[in-house]
Structures are given as C-alpha cells and as structure tokens.
Image 1 (cartoon, rainbow, N blue to C red):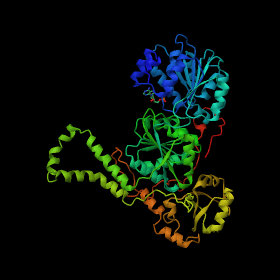
Image 2: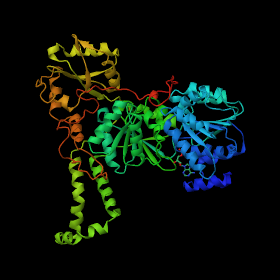
Image 3: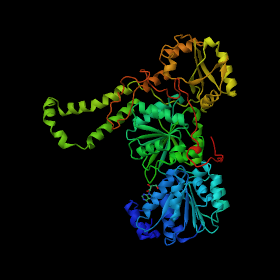
Length: 636
Ligand code: AMP
C-alpha cells in the first residue's frame, strides 16, 4: 500500500491531512488519486458513503486547480445541503496551508443573495446542490467558462431525489472540454445512462463489490410478529447498552411515534424527519453527532444529510420500499474502517425479502434470535461491572465521605459488598425482565418442508362505529372491502361494541387502509375513522364503553383473548417496563415500576387515540430546491 506522499500529494495538503489523522490512503483514495493526478479523464467510481470519497476526488482536484486564476475550475454536485457543507468544509481543511484557496458551498434554503455575493469574489471550487446551482446559473451569476471538472457525489442519491433533469441541464451548460467524475454507492441504469451520455470512455473504479454494502457491515435479521416490532427494538437497545444507532422507519408518523415511545420509555432517542423545521433537524443532527443522543429514529430522506462515522448499528425498523435504499441505510455503519451491524426487524411475511437483499447486495444475511430477557439482564450486568472497573474516581470529592461510609459498611465482607452494590442496579433489570416473553417467531414448515406463510400477522384496529350505528360484522367487512377495493386482504377477529368496534386486518395492508379511510368515508351518514388500537381503546376506552359483548360471533376466541394468555397481552406487559439500557443520564426510569401505560398517559404507539395519524412518506421535496419526477427504482 502506498502512502499519500507516494501517491503524489502536495506537501501542504499532506500536512493538513496528517493533522486530520489521515495516516494512510483508504482503498478508494489509493485507486482514484493516481488516476486523477496522472490523467485528464472522465471517471466513474462505485464506492459506498463513508469510504473516503471526498478526499479521493478532493485532493487531486485541489492539486490540479490553477490557484493563480480566480475562475471557477471545479463544480461538485451533491444531493443535500448537509453533504454540501460537509464537502466544502473538508476541502477547506485539506487546503488549510494553501493561501487564497476558495471553496464555497451553495445550497437551497439559504439566502441566495449572500451566496451570489460570495461567488462574485471569485471561487476555485463550488460545492452545490443541483437545484440551487441551476438557479444561480439561470440568473447568470456563475461563470463556468473555465470549468475543468464536474463531480457528481452520491449520484444515485441525487437521482433518487429527482435531480436527474437538473443534473442534465447543468452538464449541458458546462464547457465540452472538461472532465466529469461520478461517485455513486450503487449503479442503477440511470447512472449508466449518464455515464454513457455525458462521459468519454470513463475510467471505471469499483471499491468493494458492485452494489454491495460496506465489507465491514454484518447483516442480521430478526423474526417477530409485526405488532411486536417496538418491543424487539427495545430488546436490541437493551442488549447493546453502548448502542449508537440510526433506526430507519418508513413514514414520518412512524418515525415520530417510535421516537416518542422510546423517549417515554427512558431511552436517549429523538426523531429526524421532514415534518421538522430545518432548525429542528439541525439541532437533532448536532445532538446525535455529539453523541448526546444514542438513537436517532429517522426517515431515509432526512438521514441523508447526516454524516456520522462510528455508528454501532443501523436498524431497519421497517424495510425501505426500494431494495437499493437498504444499501444506503446499512452503508451508514461500518464506515471509515470500523465494523458495524445492520439489523432488519421482519415478520414472517417479509422473510422472503431477505433472499432479494442477499441477491442484490451479494451478502449473506444471518438469522439472529431476538435476545431473551435473561440474556439482556446478563449483558447489562456485565456492562455495569465493566463500567465499575473503568470508572474515573473523583478522589477529592469522594474522599471526604469515605470514613463515614467505611464505618457504616464495616460489618460487610468484600463478597457481600460486591453482591449488594451490583444488585442495586441489577435488581431493576431482573424485575423488569422477569416475565418478558420470547419475541421470536419460528418459521413453520408444512409436510413438504416448505415454509408456510405466517397466519397471525394481523393488526388490530379501532373504528368509531358500533352497535348503535346498526353495524354487524358482515357490514364491517363490506365497508372495508368497499373502501379498499382489495379482495385478498384478510380480516381477522371482529368485535362490535356499543359505540365503537375493533377488527383485525392483514398487517401488510395497514398503511393502505389507514390512508383509504382518510377519504371522508361514511357509514349511515356518520363519518368513519379508524386507528390502530392501543391499550386504551382496547380496554373499552377506560369505561367509555362497558359493553364487553363481543359481536364477532366467536365467543370462545374472545374469551380466550381476554384471559390474558395471549402473546398480545404478554407483549403489553413488557411495553410498560419503562426503559432499558443503562444510559448514563442517571435518571430514574423506574424499570418495572409504575406502568406509564396504565397511567393513561401513553402516547398510542402506531396510532393514537383522538389524534389524527398521517402516514406520510418523507419525500424528496422536503429537502430539495425544486420538485422533479423520480426515476423508478427496484421495489420488492
Ligand atoms: P467520506 O467518505 O469522504 O465522507 O469520508 C468518511 C470519513 O473518513 C470522514 O470522516 C473522513 O474524514 C475520514 N477519512 C477519509 N480519508 C481518510 C483516511 N485516509 N484516513 C482516515 N480517515 C479518513
């Protein structure tokens, strides 16, 4: 392996990067830097985020730019404002010892006038988001006549966010005699099209396998019931006390709900999604970067701007709609030569997606058992012991109390002392997890050995009509079918109560159903609304409806359910455990103490009482300058 010096990096840049801790080139740098330094060529490099791409193209560009000229010679396009700022900052760091080197980030959502003012003073490298760049070009505020390089960083993300037309327009207006460099984590056909259409015999460099995730990431999947996803997440958080993770959800509502629930349960978590203002998003990202947050619950779009190197885990609370998105998610861990774990929480019906992921990434996914309560306790116990061993003792402060403490504990042997100190914390976990259910679901096989589809993936819903509206189970089924126009959606148990009812539906159709019922659905001229049932609604709304006469006709099953023996009930018990890993906040989270659920203050997870849920996908339009169509991506 060559050193940066051997690759031909300028001594001033060498000094700067060695101060940044760059000891040896990363693989993409070793492959790209000599090519760009030695040749004037177009280039396509396939490399994951976090593999050192910025320096791979940044260092040679800095070197090849004529510093005496004040013309813009390189344009770096990237998908988000955050990445834009980060690349510009990295380049500023690399050029710390080069006088008068100018790099400016321009992105949407900030004052264009300020950016114009800065640009007018001359700039060697512009780092831009495509929408804002095009805007500035159309206003005639940018002179690209001497441009030598256009770099597309995270090109696939840009396409994903609908920037294709902008990218094409920008390229059209740049000089013919320039080199185009394209960096992408994946190689969808659209990227190949750009490479063919705008590039001249590009040098192709692949770091790692094509379309594969980082080599340092291990991929695991857990199998549980869909409705127990949140409990599984808590187990994971408790099992890895030092977790530093992004938890990916599919919708903004889900993101907010999972984060709210985690916070309520005492975890150090927050949400990041498109319903937050830019300021709120910046705050959350900063807290996470500084590790003031352990878990960030995010949508794919919102997490794009976030650059964090040392995540321990990426958790797919729900898999993304598009397979390639999984690569982006999991590529957020295992960066900069560190190892990472990507976990997918799946139900039995989603299990087939593992094969698709394996094919797409060329990686093996390992089935892992969701840790049992006992395993969590053990892990927490030894975590605590380790902490005790490595704790920094504040001699000055503690010394003054020690004589009294020693005197008071004088009667205890060393063994007794250890046992007692450890138990102070350990008892909480033991109590907390005493009756914790096994959250794993086993894949069942029929006589041919073929896996059978799981039959219990239902979600229980609350609907605001009941007996007094004259509804019977068959009417309810008819209503759902009319609204949904989906014939193969299974409906499970139905309970018709006086003023409202419950019914179970195939979990795969949940989102579609919730959306369909937002369209002013009426039954006997009464406006109908549905929401995911939670304990409050499930127990008759705390006395809202005392009628426990189950109208579903399956008396036996209802009885069985109400005797507390079902997984659902045991699951609810765990939800009230109130928090998990021994985060340092030191706050009493009351493991196993009073159930927040019972206090009635629990925010309904997966759908709240009296609160309208909006299952909005986090879309590109939140973060980009303009809306554009998005190319079709491979779905499951
Ligand atoms: P990037 O893919 O450019 O976002 O880089 C990912 C992370 O790796 C950033 O924090 C860089 O500062 C860091 N990095 C890049 N190159 C090196 C290197 N040669 N040695 C150590 N760290 C590096």
